Image (cartoon, rainbow, N blue to C red; front, side):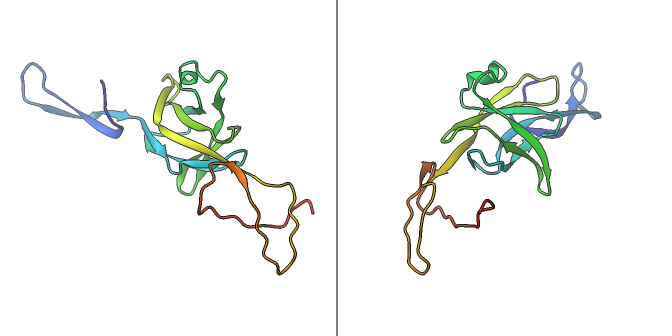
Length: 167
């Protein structure tokens, strides 16, 4: 069987020895496929839930993100970044950890326990990071411009200040 796209609950229809086509409602095929994350950008070293999109995705599957497609074949040697499944109200999500800034990651995914990891080159996750001065001093009531550096920053990005828990 070579299915070209994911689907759940495909029913077998067969023509045996040139007889009429017969439907076999109890013979089902589920075709697993990951079509993407619901978001395509995460922040480095910040646990963030990323919902996977596709067919047949379950908590019994295994996967990892790589910045080198060859690591998928080698089963995550060296350039793989861990992800953990986490239930959410919206469904199944993953937490990406340990990815370097400005990484362009692709997905290696195994459906169930028996399948080898498949590299999904089109399922991408970009990693951003914000770097700023360690401390900025501002005067109340006086506008202050702060320049941020980092990876993956773009015009229109927004930020705000919150009280430090260490203060």
